[in-house]
Amino acid sequence: MTDLALSSDRPSHTAAPVHTGSVPAAHPSAWRRRLPLLLLLPFGLVFTLFQLAPIAWVAINAFQAGGDWSLVHFREILGSPWYHQSFTNSLDLAFWSSLAGLIIATLGTAALRRVPGRLQNAVVAFTTMASNFSGVPLAFAFIVLLGMNGALTLLLQQLGLAGQFNLYSRGGLLVLYTYFQVPLAVLLLYPAFDAVRDDWRDAAALLGAGPVRYWLRVVLPVLSPALLGTFIILLANALGAYASTYALMTSNYNLVTIQIAGLVAGDIFLEPQLAAALSLLLMALLLLVTAVNQWLVARSRHV
Image 1 (tube, rainbow, N blue to C red):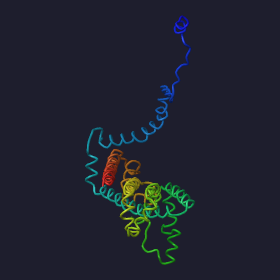
Image 2 (image 1 turned 45 degrees about the vertical axis):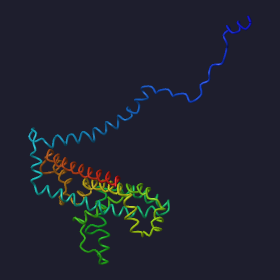
Image 3 (image 1 turned 30 degrees about the vertical axis):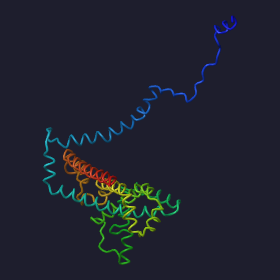
Image 4 (image 1 turned 60 degrees about the vertical axis):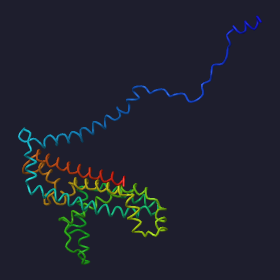
């Protein structure tokens, strides 16, 4: 009994309990948590200097006249037929070029998804390059090809197919705008076609739907959010276009962007505050169009 008692009083050297399961990770230190914010600072600085600061300057100076707060610039714009025409021309070119570019890009992207992979990659690479071909080089290329003495114009005249086309007119600008809208629309729509499955066509054919009905009842409803979003981006892209139009037409065609540039850097008179008011109205128009697009997209998702 004594030996048992002594052995019970003696501390037992048992193994420590083994903890199973995953060991919780240590919390990152403060500097590691703040590192993403530090890396974001350059972007925030650039965004503030080149996005927020110009918008703030425009918003403030649009309501300034002679050092005081005033609505005189907006009254001048709203009461001027010249500025009315500039907005009408800009909306006209933007709407029709965006619609034409969207239709061409939709058909082209649908066809592109049916070709072999190597050809797809080559066309997408070319489209990426073409989407960056704009401004003065694009206008010069169109002058060389479709100007009064352009290579393509002379060829069409020899074939008797030239007609009455004039590059330096609304029709010429519409062709120019549509050209730089199509590559951008293709790049925006190309990923959206991943949502369209190949077996849907076979299923629609089994149910008696032809190609037209398949597109109207299946493909377009699925792609409608992407189509609406792309159309709005194209519209904004066309409304903000300046360099190509000015290089082709100088100030012979009345557009909002040309009016703004003339008021800021014109040779006759400078009115930067009036230009700020025009810019603010243009931004308000784009915000309105974007809000309508978001409402339509949200409604299409709930239908």
